[in-house]
Length: 282
Image (spheres, rainbow, N blue to C red):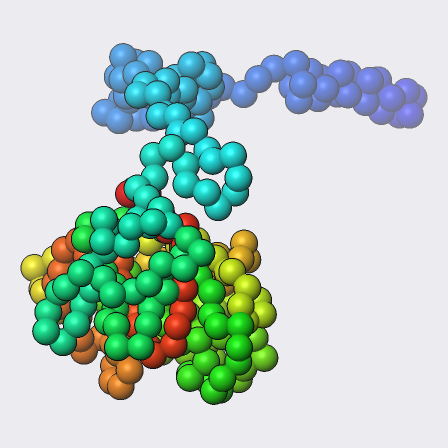
């Protein structure tokens, strides 16, 4: 009899427990009356993921339309919106020479469609001035090897007349790494030595962002930055220039507030030739 009573009690308790656990939902506890939120404010609250109610149209920007530029037929040639800084014929159209006596017409010679420095000439600088730009320039050091180190095919491309990208015959020509071809002189060595043999045409493609200055005229608010490809190979990857190029000293000590500046081609005593120079203002 006791066993039957226990079985009857278990048969009653099991369905009741199941019903309480799964058949009924616990009541939600409400905050105290003074802390209850306004139902209208609850309806205005944004969902946790605000994109669930967006459409793809809301993230599409149509205007203004991106302007179209006609690329050159041959890589390295100027695109439609480029400024031609040397066309292989007239140096003085876009360039002037810097000498000890001041500015004068260029004394560089034109040979086979390229302009070349000669003994006694000065450096060339562009008559136009630039801030942010994309610059393409082709250069060639002498095919006859004379000298060594910094005495072999030495020249340079100065951005805004202040920041030198070194030109040198660096084909099996050991020198200090931050002074070889492709270096931002005395600041950044190139990532790799991408030099061709002496007498072969080489190219630099430079993307440059000019510095910005704040109230302090001797420090950068944002420094000048540059990316450089030599012969199609990345050699400077968005480097932040420390200051103007200096042979001796610390670049940071020479910073002075400046605006747009010329492109300057250095005459360093070696007959380096240049051709196919064009620039795009950014």
